[in-house]
Image (cartoon, rainbow, N blue to C red):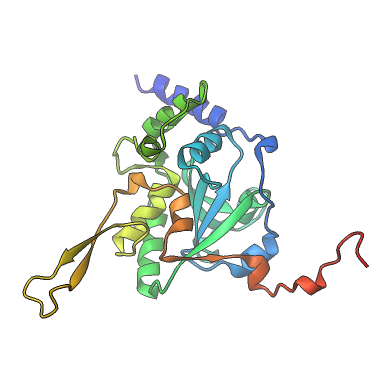
Length: 254
């Protein structure tokens, strides 16, 4: 009985993941420069150009539609072309899987790095995410996103975040940003927590307050949240590797 919905799910995933080059807007980063700047547990944001990317970018009002976690050579293995696997992502068609750098070669990308993330926590995160390789993509989330393509309706801004957080709640299923957000939350690293300010009782200073952090559920995170988070650095390879505007050769200028 499960064969029919699974087959339909695969067809839907293939339809939604079909690339549309005309939808690209950003400039791809030189893959050599990108690789030189990456460190384990960096989050790579991707401006996709598939049908589902269009929905994600609309609902989140963001450039970024996808996120992958950089593991590095320790991930092991190579693809059919002999390129080493370096990233883990939750893919519509293949579920949680390994990917080589070439997967993102033609896309506009951004590196987001957690500031002062400890080595032990990095190792714990990588073990956790690698342990989920093979899990399937959340089909319920996929169906919910697909509804916003026929045609793409106007959704009030206050509802858009909830639109990407349907999901089945099944821990053996994942969507790209939720997979990564959960790993950070499990080591206590904030992304965009809800922060409350409570007065400290019996404090000498009557105006003293304490910051209380509340964890958002991982299903509420979108790729853009790593970009706007105050706890992540944005790493731009062109600048990191020594940019000097005086070395630019402009056409038509002497």
